[in-house]
Length: 423
Image (cartoon, rainbow, N blue to C red; front, side):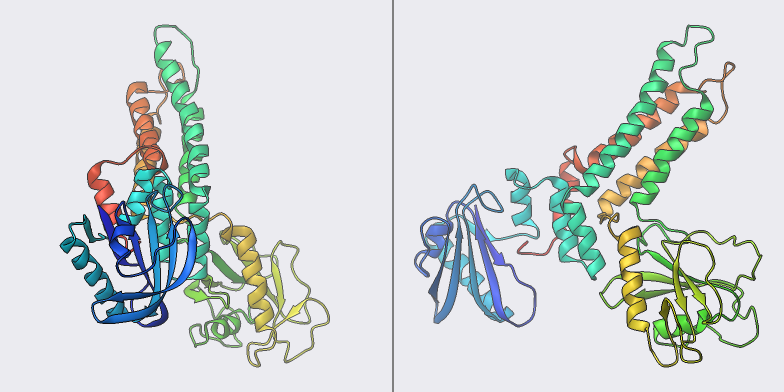
């Protein structure tokens, strides 16, 4: 079956795309437009019904194409109604001539690529993530997933989990031997805890974030009245935090979504003031920004140091900002972006809903295994070894389904039906 669809987005644009793939693609298009031999790009005209349009033809013979089949793409004037009319006309004329041709279903081009082996399953899912990316950070995360970062990280966690399972199963084999402890309950619980922490990180969890919030956390810190809340409001571009000269005006953390100038989405946090000598009990963020008045020295802590209130007193060294005049705000934004990229941005991978569900399933099984082995047996080994091993195996199976194992047909249908038509 040869399939055809509009491959560009909805709405008008200077150029639109019609994509065709299958064994009869050349026979389908030949009466209407010149199709070159071999891998070529040519300028031509498309003539169908009453239409005669300028067209660029991109010919990509299989198996060296996206779908592994013969693929031809037509670049045409980018009016959505015009493109849909062209696709309908090509399907109709193809059927009349006895060709096996049809409108492409959602995700069918990428499904054929997966079937042909030109894409692995996790790469096919990353196509959907790229299409639906809403920010530069989303695009970066989806590209890392497509490049194999997700498979690498899942492989590392799976290897660690398999070692734990091997130790537990070896303990079962030596159950008849007295005083033989291959892994203690405490050690096993610690190992499984490391696996769970790695899986939590894979989901993009940060302090105070929900499971589906993978935005890095940027926290403003400093002594009372250092200008944190004023800077917080200035960065957001609206009045969110109460600002007063009185110390400890901010008593609780304020958390707001914020988009940096490069399109990266973050969680911006305004923290209560920390008096000198007071214990800083706040959990670490992805990026800490210490707000220091211009006449004070920065604390000896690893963080971005920003001298606030630069409109009141000139800053001699370091980065100075003024929330009132806007001086230094662009430089601060660039510093935050670079720090986020170093601490968080390069490690985030995009997870589809299916992948996220599988990671959570693995976490749940690990948690059950940890709970079952929480009470050691008489000689300090793992209690309920058979049930513990069964849960660890189930966790491994869930991780294997993320990238390695072939999902069942119903899962395949759900994944590819969520794609756009033409992808």
